[in-house]
Image (tube, rainbow, N blue to C red; front, side):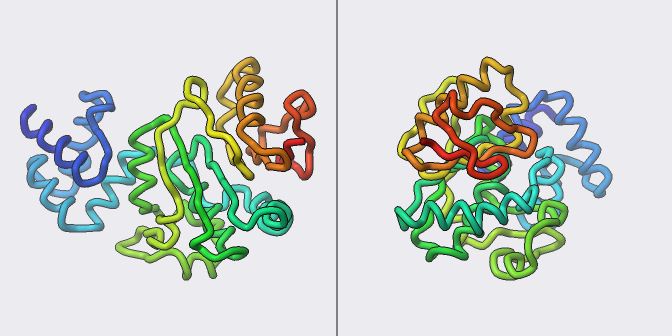
Length: 257
């Protein structure tokens, strides 16, 4: 049995990029065993055969593996401000924007940015860097497969244009996936790239101490070019933006001076 589970871990990593060895073994094994037994399988190898050949079984497995709290167009009114006010402003001075989605989790945010931007410029002008600390959420993001609940806020037109529904799950169109590059990055320890027109980091900074937040605001400010915009989550207002060379240009949007 241990050997069979180890083989299952290796196979899953090759198939999806997700490394189950990064999770606590006892806990993960119990979770998976109860999942496959409920479906009528008798072993990990039997279960893996169907994961390989049936999208429905694979999607259910993925859904249980990653606790997905993110969603597309989260707080939809803010995304409308991005599309109608912020991006047109940035595009006035540069037709090819340099964009970073920081702490991107399972990819809904950078894909949302790409979809919104595709209303304003041709797809081949869009390049988005998306980073996270967690290798497994990045593997999941690259696959671009999401449960219906993640798409609650997605406009119907976008759903038709950029998603394909298969066995109850939605697959992001390759045309959008190609516009996003996923990389592992530690916000507190790693160097920040520079020269960004737009940096989006939402619903993450709330988990940091005030001291760490201040350090990150400095780093994000330095990573933006003058006139670039920092977009934060709806519980993450910056109370002293001037301290970081920011000025508020809309609720939760800060422009680098």
